[in-house]
Image (tube, rainbow, N blue to C red):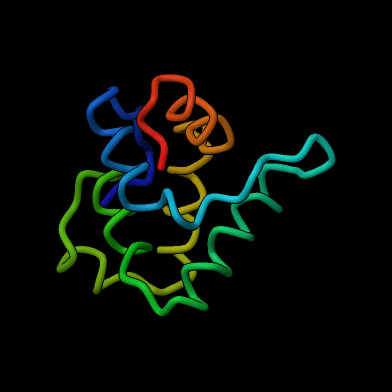
Length: 102
């Protein structure tokens, strides 16, 4: 399974928001992308949610079974890479602007 991904289309981006929306913090000008993603990961872990795996499958167009064979570090890299390529920092703002945000 390759880690080289393309940004999601609008429908898929909204699906990603449906999966991760409640874990997205408010963006801060002082916060780096890695800190922002770290907050998302911390919230998902704290909630003991399957959102992490579901988001990776959506962003990388793979199955849960394909992910199970990967080391946890590689899954984390896939998650972070997918969020960065899909401009996760602006997703919540975009969804609010179009009236999609919760």
